[in-house]
Image 1 (cartoon, rainbow, N blue to C red):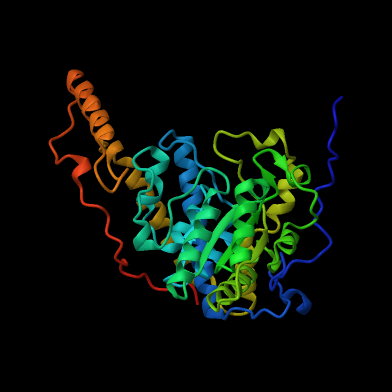
Image 2: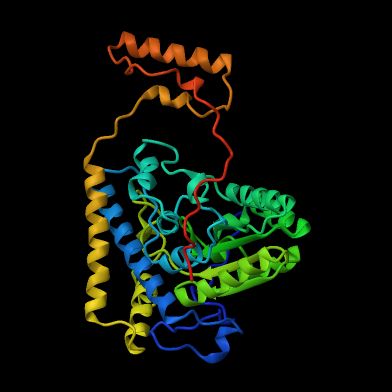
Length: 395
């Protein structure tokens, strides 16, 4: 017997999300702010600049994948308000725990483009220094990083610091057992953790209506005993305000929160995915009218805070970033296969040493002996001293 799941219309739920700016760039209804404070014009201009850079970065990287210069890449084109707005709300001491799709957030956090893209062309698993950026490596397995975010937050609570953690999670990943464990542990132990669900409507090709019967994913917070807020994920002013408030609440020792950002993935799941097989062009076009970048630009222009000259200057800066990305990808990576054995353990293991010796022997036999260098397993363990702290990304 085959059970057919109902395919509900792709309409938005009736409950209005928190919003300051409507899709046309006009001030939203006063009631939609739900008591949150609209960010200052200076902050909104800064967020606009970061979104423009993130959008250009995403489009450039997508072009590089189509040229075969990068491997599979999961674009966040269209989700910049969630990525940039949430990451900009973090304080310098806070930690970010991203997924594989959150390169724009990591760029916002201060990572160099080449370091971000290293893992996508097989150079390194994580090209940037997590300690320096207070950002964990991008997690490909669904929801595993939520547990890491809760664990670090618990450690911060035990140490008595005022650090908070922010972790991104997709709508599909909320169905994972790891997400349940993270939500439950965080709520029971009142860890300073903010879970940000980027509800982009699809878990690869599976629409939200076929993966959860919840009208709003933010409602799931109730079952764990923590607050849940639904925000217009294409309104960066609202995202920044809601996440900032949730992080401040966490730092005060008031426990975790779950934020659902209602957004949309305009590009395919990855460059190897054909999204036309499971969604219509009409649906995509509807969401294009809610574009977060065009929305904020229209709002700032109407408010007299942005003009053609400023827009052109910001776009030129983004083009410089894109040119830098192209230049980086023109350089062939110098890969040492024996680096596979580096940084696996803090202290040397005999079995790993044997495996390294076998690989070196095979490379030598093939005439590809690695360049002379100290044994990778003899490197000193990474020290746990705090790294220089970046400036706060928001405010």
